[in-house]
Amino acid sequence: MTATNAAALPATERAERPTGWLAAPLWVGALLIVLAFLVVYPLAMLVFGALTDSNPVVDGFGKFRPSIARFLEVLGNENVHLAFFNALVACGGGTALAVLIGLFFSWIVVRTDTPGRRFIAGASMVPLFVPPLVAGVAWSILGSPKTGLLNTTLKWMGIDFRFDFYSMSGLILVFGIYYAPYVYMFTASALRNMDPSLEEASEVSGASAFTTLFTVTFPLIAPAILAGTLLSFVVMLGIYGVPAALGAPANINVLTTYIFKLTAWSPPLYNTAAAVAILLMFVTAVMVWAQQKILTGKSFATVAGKAFRPRSLNLGPWRWFTFGLALFYLFVVVVLPTIALVIAAFRKFLFFKDFAALFDMKAYSLVHFNAVFDNPLTMLSIWNTLKVGVITALVGGALAFAIGYTVNRTQVPGRRLIDLLATVPVAIPGLVVGVAYLWAWIGLPGGLYGTIWILALAFVARFMPDTVKALSTSFLQIHRELEEAAWICGRGLLGTIGTIVLPLARPGVVAAMTLLFVLAIRELGSSLFLYTSDTTVMAVLLLDYYEGGNTGKTAAFSLVQTVILAVLLGFTNWLSRGSAQGSARVG
Image 1: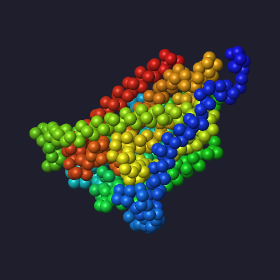
Image 2: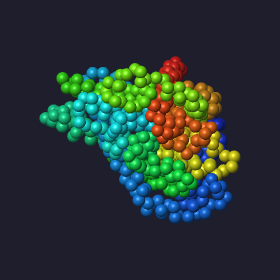
Image 3: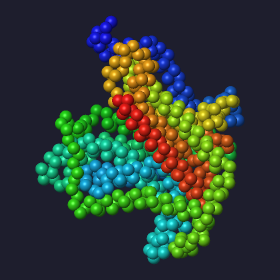
Image 4: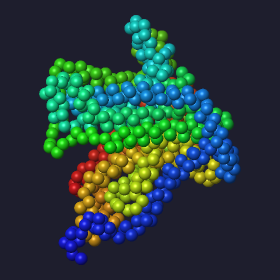
């Protein structure tokens, strides 16, 4: 057949030309086996753990005694009810605050002439890269009711007011300011893609800019607001670090801290922990389902066929007010916590007789840093963290590429099931992933438990939906004609992927692997139940320092972790830029 005749074939027939797809059933079967290993089996063991009264450590895998007594006990336990209520209040209040902040920032960056919008947009994303436990530790130093730096400053100023971040209001405030970027990402993108003529028509009809904002603009980006709201709530629901740092001193338990307490008791209550983990997963799954249900069938079209430019509202003198509010937020969420960590890390004792004592240079030294690096676990945790991050990025990136290509670029049977299984972890908080992998492997002799690999595989499963979604965008931007041209020229499936798809999708692949690496080195929830003394990672060691009551060591190691994370982010950003330039040359 000539090339002309081949080009005249329908796209679906041409898509079947590569001989590589003769092995499609084997390929789909292999992916399903991998996903079953990473997702289905651990979740099945989690459910099994909640419905048995056996101890996997003592009894092993051979003496399971099915029982629903533990699960029913959890449903009727008042402590679980209180932890559930606290979680809803803390996450609900934090989400409401995050929506207010995220919407405000997206509006001033996209729709106003506020000065420094590019700087504000970039700096407002910084909280996403701050490990939750580091944020919690910093605000415990700032807002401790007795020794907090903020209260010391207020006392010096003669202001009769005291902060207390060891409270529900403290949890809500820290949740809100640190997870506002999730709302910003969704709403800013929606505002950029919205036709400004809709707002102009409202103002022509006599509505003020303020009225237009709440009657036209925000209603039209309702899907983005809802998506950001539910995502923020789901993420907060699975966070352990902030409630551990700010809630535990006030005896405020949420579901994540309560689950960890169950496994820390002697003997560990693994069955009860599994039952509570299922409750947490169920609430998260309901929220994800609600998001999809509400958006399905609704029309919020705001992009017309004609070209347009997002308009900038002239705020006049008020633009300096919005600029000041943005700087205040950045000061509160970035500068203040950093100052607190620096002071606590370098000061010998975190006690201030008065405000002037803050500036007594004799009270500062490197004693806490020396103590941190004298601990052999410090370098071990750093090395383990880097190994887990690299393994997670490589294995997770390769798996996400295989899943993304199969789902988005082929028509093979079973691809919808692959997509479904790869998406399931989006409804599973990190702490639940840790409990599930604990039940899956702790009772198996010679298994993965106690190795670096179980941490890496748990992270791969935990962040699979994020990675696949990031890669899917790159796949959808590559026109199918490029692959078809390679097939016509005699390239096989693997040759086409290696010479056409992978070079063009390289920026997305590098970005996805970078995302995996960053998420892995800051992840705490999934690590809590899977580490041993030989596989301690930085997030776990930081928690050990904090629970040990040594604020100076905690602050010092927080700065070490933050600096390492910043350096790695800079390196991966440079790598991503180089990859993007290389891809542009290929194109």
